[in-house]
Image (cartoon, rainbow over all chains, first blue to last red; front, side, top):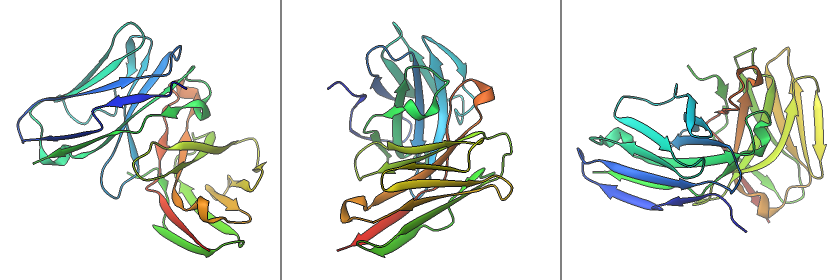
Length: 115
Length: 114
């Protein structure tokens, strides 16, 4: 079964480097979400895509964070000039639409460690 | 500004007994609430949800109760099984926003002892 997949599963980088995190949503899902979970914290909303557009970017913590989605499918979250506080698990979720919140299916996450 | 709070970081119960996980929220615009379960190195999986027009929703061993006046919800697991041991997240949504984004609590780690 094709669930939400994310790559890489783990990423270690040096402070100041750029990283790209990838999300492959469930086929046919139009809504895509990025969340992050810092140590000991709950999941924090970052950005929401409907198709290729992002009507809600309110959770992006700074202008070092950006995301895009192409072809209504794959999404990439880019963090520029990484900082140690960016270390977290980055989770992607997809759903068939934004109107039924319970249908968000999560990927396994990318564990990012910034040294 | 933590809009969804789970004040108990951990809970330990004996197999067969009831597990009660609690969650409080502050935003009165929230109208949909969900519980997710998360195992280590996996993404959260949806468990059960409740709309603000209801005060109870039951699905097998899982029941969610909503007290709107207290802005409080709880998840009951009866009977608890060792396989229920995981981190449980409460989440809330304001569906009038039409984005479906979820606001999560910090999570409660449940340990069910055999």
